[in-house]
Amino acid sequence: MADALLAEAERAGARVTVLAVGTWLEQYPPMAQRIVRGGHDLGNHTMHHLDIAAMDASGAYSEIEGCAQRLRALTGSIGRWFRPSQTRYATPLPSCPPCSARRGPGRSSACTLGTPAP
Ligand SMILES: [Zn+2]
Image (cartoon, rainbow, N blue to C red; front, top):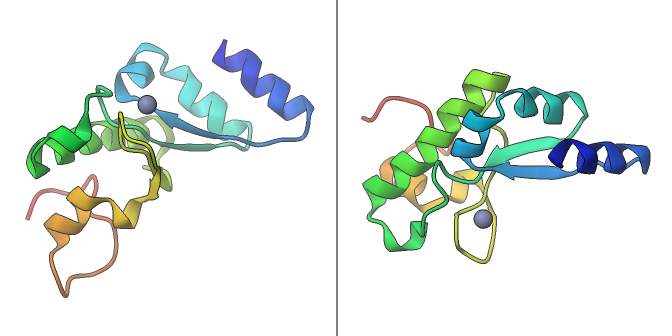
């Protein structure tokens, strides 16, 4: 199904952004390379697609980090996008609240996902 949609987009000359859930990546690991090789963007949509807004910062961080680790293992990159699960809007990674909370004021603006906790 996902492969057919990607192929159809490619036939039309379009590229898409796929916000993947970590458990889906675990179930279909070849899809990560398939997406990237097709010229599409692959981003983080948390590990288990739970209600991330209802979690505390460390629970939310581990949901995001779990997916980021799978993205990195499968493609060499955590991607450029994070979409929180069960919320309405997507945000660029550097402004994701768990990441900003861990960074704290005055720290580098680089995203800390996938790096060991300070
Ligand atoms: Zn979703």
